[in-house]
Length: 156
Image 1 (cartoon, rainbow, N blue to C red):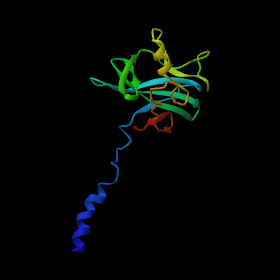
Image 2: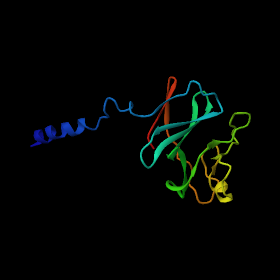
Image 3: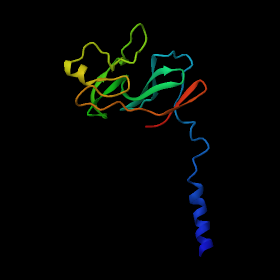
């Protein structure tokens, strides 16, 4: 009976290993052209209702802040309490720039000029993704690994 249990467990234990191509499907972003204190938005997937983009800020040669940015129809989805509840759409999103660069005091926000006062307050975050509004959530940080000229984004 004990030998039978061992043979039954072998396929189960083998299935616990990650597949050989586990990291190949994760988004790879070429960051060699990004300068320190700049940002980019990388759009990974788009579907009928909501897609996924990432805000990537380069702090140092090997240090990045990466945040999840849902999108819809070419615009960024602003949160209503959480990032998966549609609070509104934003055409221009990113950190404030001074002379084309971000700073440690830059705010990350919707840059649209036609926002209501409450939207300006609610759709703003610190450089490190902490909410400044009362009702919105913090930005969702995404883990990454720097591999050569790319960063490989992990799933949230």
